[in-house]
Image (cartoon, rainbow, N blue to C red; front, side, top):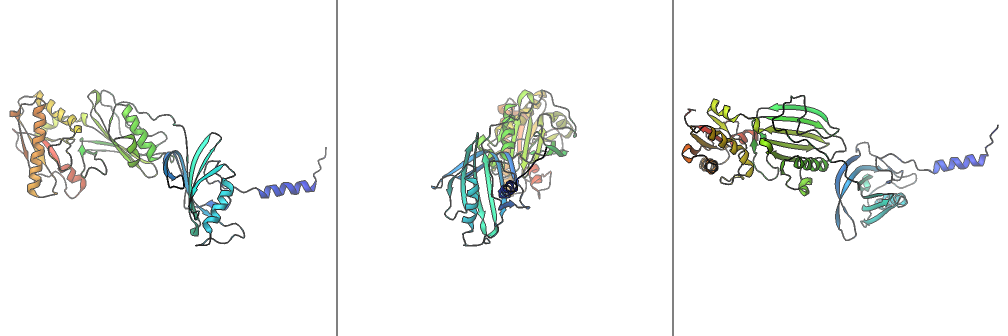
Length: 421
């Protein structure tokens, strides 16, 4: 059988092919198409996050609205079409880019909600085929740069979960993930570490000095998926910790999650005493640090050295009488130790770093030591067995030239009166 083609049909087919825009794959969802003049900028990669937020102006009155969902964003370049004037200042470049994009976007179902008078920035909405999305476009027309940021409403996926800490301390090596603080799904381990030092659990932006707890720290570092945002990681890890019985110290509320790339939590159930600090840094670089205070043998350290620092006793900044509730777990262990051996007579020592004058530091350390003594007396320890004294900055245990060193020097210690130092 022979097939015969009419020349005019072939020419028509070729014309249709040539008239079809050569869409570049810019990484956005299929329902956001851009004219062929919009091309990828090799120096600007697509930002794609499964859960994120963006705030757009949604009407001519300037009303802003916060949207949450899947986020896509990218800086791109506008390349004028053949015969189109070059872009520049005060020559209507913004309007030309706006018209070129609107010609495509409006046909795809996008509705413009508002636009600047010079069309350098505008917001749009898409609602079709079960999809709902918002996008903002802004440009630096003379530099031929176009920014598009899109938020697509999305149903929440499966909730991130973590196991509760066991009743007895878990055994694991540096090669293992921390059993009760697992990595985010799809993360790759990039490092691990163990340090015989306290963990800093100070709240960023509020505490003006480090707050140390524990005696040894386990650290695991991971590279998270590229689609993992700070909002999703901190928000969902926070909820998972709460469901597993942890007390989240901060962010104190779900609404505050967007302000932090870090969270601190404390677990005190079933006789355990564990602190955790979780960090998210740019490009989903993740860090999980923990100290198991309950594993510290307070009695052995006290018997061996006659004194032991009580990291985890927290005061409000520059205050002596306001013990924070988080201090209770450490002080309860001190009370238990003193109750097991009624012959122990101890001094509660207060120490500071070298910031401030001698008199100020001496009074501050003395008052803090007295506050701890009062707590112990109120919790069943005979007052006759305890004294308290402040030593100011006279007994440093670390370098006062570093933040960490100063934090270690700011401490309360339990010291046995029968031992010489």
